[in-house]
Length: 477
Image 1 (tube, rainbow, N blue to C red):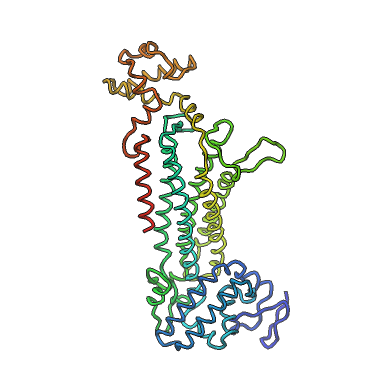
Image 2 (image 1 turned 120 degrees about the vertical axis):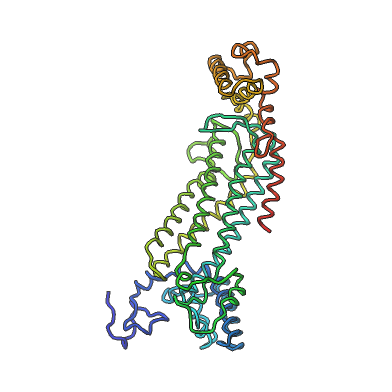
């Protein structure tokens, strides 16, 4: 690596100088310039950067730092630059390091010295912190829309299957009969909590750092509340040191994203099991699956499997941000350039997974008879028989033991409880009468009996679906 020791020597092809180079006696090495640049990835929030600059220029004109003509020239120039970027005609330069300096340099090229006045009263430290918050806010709104689409898809499918019976599981062992609609509503509850978390996260995202400058604020008579109003922030941040160095909001978003991915992964695992030859509970349309290059019979649930795999990736993005921040002293440090890629990756991964699920879930086709047959296996109505005995005056622990003996007989004879004869059941308790078959041992009796808030009874599931539509609409309000 060769660099000049004299400021008068021009930069060579292995050297570059930035817009901030006045203090330096030698140019930055070309490799170092590329190594430290972020424009390769932070150019994705050019819209937010331009929006922030337009608001900043408007505020500077309001307080008299810029003239109205200078403000208008800056805003018009920024609009033209945005059009250039979106048309693919903008040259992103690594030697200008980041999205901010690329746009500012192009603005100065277009409108002259007025472009250099735009940076008055701000720093790249508060500028990037503002851009990221604007970007995350926009992405949260988009992700909330995808969650809403998935939630409504689940509700529509659940409404069709309020009386479709399937086995409910604990420890992946048959436990009690439930309805498919009730199971789907458990998925809905997970995702509704995810929406609530993102909405809450958005409140802390939506605070404006701009005006904090490098770390201590600025000597210019800025009006931060006015700028915040122009950009749609709820408020300006209270402390300049914290404002430029805080990335809690990004960590909090990634934590919320990790939880959403965990829920999608749990749903994926169930779909993978349910579509297997051993379960056959559900069919996923072919467009969400692939085949095998060697086994012609295969239909692989690739979308759920890939979502399950991508979950670990988002977990890693969260850990990356936590690790990035854990040892940073106040205020801003170059380390924070590394905040963007794990944030962007979590956003991109989550959006893709939600888009796939929002299309796939409403298209699921349950195998109703196979689900019902599975619920008939595994003595899923054993608890109902115990409850039947309790209602006839037997203490629950005694009823539990009686039913356990009946189950043992069923295992011995390879029969479900409903397939045992009345006389076989009565050898364990003479309180069992013929009504046991209608009141306790049918699948319909089992699910219908759980007719309370949160229960699996079809009527309760219908009411839960109705409430769910109201709940998600209230979240959007």
